[in-house]
Length: 193
Image 1: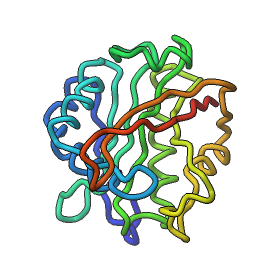
Image 2: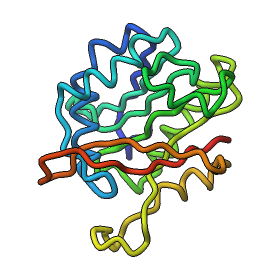
Image 3: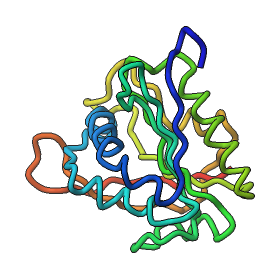
C-alpha cells in the first residue's frame, strides 16, 4: 500500500484462518449492518459460518489491517466444490472458485482500496489454478425506502469486473434485520465471470 493508504495485507489459507475468525466476524457484523443487508449479526453465527473457509485447504482470507493492527477490510473465498452444508455453491460448477465477500469499513471506501483488494484476491485465486469465479449478490430494489441516496449498487462492481448473472440462479438466504425478532428471507443472485 502507498503512504496515502498505510494498510497492511495479511493473506491466510485453510487452517491459518482459524485464529482470525473473531476479528473477521466482527468486521462482517459492522459492515453488513449497513444497507442493503441491515444484518443484526452475532459473533456465534459468524464463527460458525466462517469456519467453512478455515476447514477448506484452499479457503482463503485476505485481511487489511490499519496502523493500529485493527481489521478494516477483508476478502474471502473457497472452491465452489467446497464443504457448504446447503450445496448453494453447486450452481457455479466444480471448477469455479467462490468469492464470498469483499468488505471494507466505511472510512476506507471510495479510495481505490476495494479495487486493490479485489486484484489481490483475483491473483491468489489464479495462483490456485482457478479461472472461473462465482459470487452471490443481494437483489435490491431501486425504490426501496431504506436505500440511502448515496448507495452504490454492489452489482455494478461485479458487472464492471466482467461478471454476468447466471439466469434463474437465485438463492433465498435468511438473516435477522436490525430491530427484528426473527429472520426473514432475502434473494441473492448468482454471478460468474
